[in-house]
Amino acid sequence: MTKEKSEYDNLIGEKVEKGDFSLEELTGEKLVDVASENWKDHWKGMPEFEQEHVHYKKITVKFETEADFKKFGETIGQKLTDKTRGIWFPEPEGVRESYLYRWFDEE
Image (cartoon, rainbow, N blue to C red; front, side, top):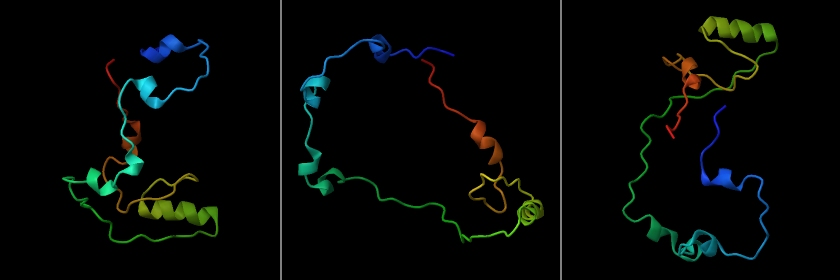
């Protein structure tokens, strides 16, 4: 297990006295009170959201028995477990393996 390198590590085990500090005092930066401003001003120049892929149809399938559930998985050729909450049919390529990928920072 690698030890996280950050300023946070320097504070582990240190006792910090409670005080009445503003967020501006702690960060050293002037903060803007966003709640009091018009939200539309923050969205000027932002692109519109465009949904590139919309699925055709979503259905709910219920099973009376575990055997029916297993037979359904075999019939459609997908591995279903008690933790399966949803599937795509047909299953897109690489879906099962995608949970193995993680992003790590070099530092």
